[in-house]
Amino acid sequence: MEKKEKMLVGVLRQSPVFSHLSEDELQNVIGRVHIREYKKNDTFMNEGDSNNFMYLIVHGRVKITLVNADGKEMILAIRQSSDYFGEMSLIDGRKNSATVCAMEKTVIAVIFKEDFYQMLNTQPKVLLGMMRELCLRLREANEIIERLSYNKAPQKLGLLFKNYINRYGSEQDASTVLSIKLTHQELADMSGLVRETVTSTINQWKGEGYLATNEEGLFCFFPPFFEKFPDL
Image (cartoon, rainbow, N blue to C red; front, side):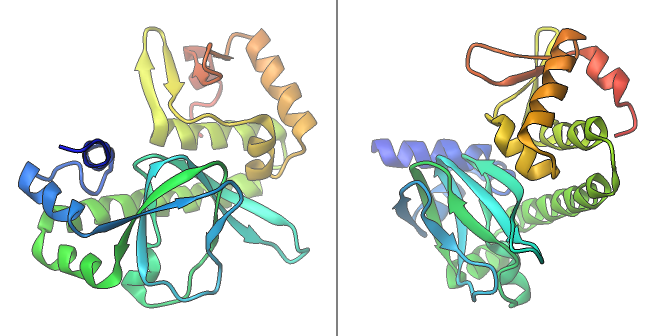
């Protein structure tokens, strides 16, 4: 098996949509994808445009954004390897609801609209995985609305972290570690706060034993964090 194919199999096995497929079913999916590479700051999906593809991130990170009434870019989410997007406009036939931009050199597996529908019609496991992920995204959309309703920085940041813990968190020793790297500026852009406020809040929480960052720069959350935000 070639290196690129092995990488694709690994990514598909981590994806919530394709993780339950058999080896033969995975090979069928691999036979339908087209690999594309994007440089940092390349935009490959624009809000309001028509879309004919589903995108699966093989390597790298992307940001999903909207432009508000003041013309300011709002980051809705940051996604990484094994995450996918673009499926909503394929399902409902409407325009793209957001813009997607590469945050670093990014490799994408593209699935054409016709192949996307072929998979949905012939592989029930893919359809079930898609339904589960759509439910998760609906919950995340509700959390974004709730986050915007808060006035205090700790509540905004706490809910944002809980959102990413639900998607990217894993238990390691006595902490919950995020597998996705987030900078203070990215957290500010997603929470509607200024970077200085995010840094100040995180430093305070580090001092109080709520969280830390490991050698890889990933956030690690300790039990006091979840006690502080039990209902978020």
